[in-house]
Length: 248
Image (cartoon, rainbow, N blue to C red; front, side):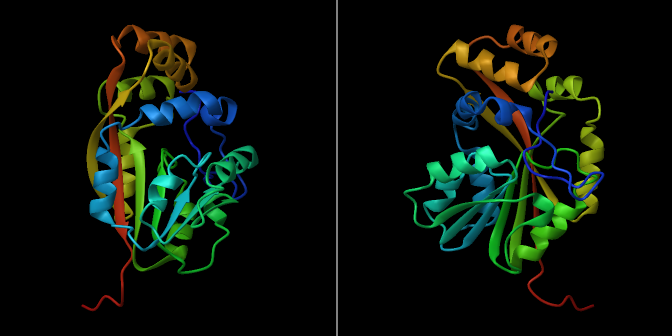
């Protein structure tokens, strides 16, 4: 896979930001991808079951160009998107310019430009693929969460056909079992979700697969995908911040 980390992770040096070549290089094609993803809203249903954000404050870490911000804004009190790549921050601000309860700010996941205890839900979608190495980002999420708040991490499931094997073939560093073990050890509860990606045209489908994978894997994926849709497996990792002292 060419690149699938939107948020900043501190894998080697705290100042590192791992680029996401798909949306960083082809934001218009990635917009098509966003529109195609989860057309039935099953991920949103799982998120809402974990933390209903109605009337609450939401932070979207690695928000890209802000595609998900208006969805949260329909019910949330305040929504803040945090994105490390300046061109995407500008695109996100343009997207939400008419939404008074939404803002987009520049910053990496391990240094969120937000005060302590300012959020009820921290959401990160396709931002923490590698698991180990993202501890600074997880600590920052806990810092900005209020007691009782929720950290929700949505990642692709490398064990789920057909997308998972394409992902693993394209990124040899990625081991789904290691990532799942990491999040379990960090106190997250796992929900597996299968979502439908549905495109308007075959051209759109092929363009998206070509920005997500190397030429060889993209052609394999295209050949294995008849029609305009396919299922994609996700892992939704949920962790709630304690609301008070834990007594024995």
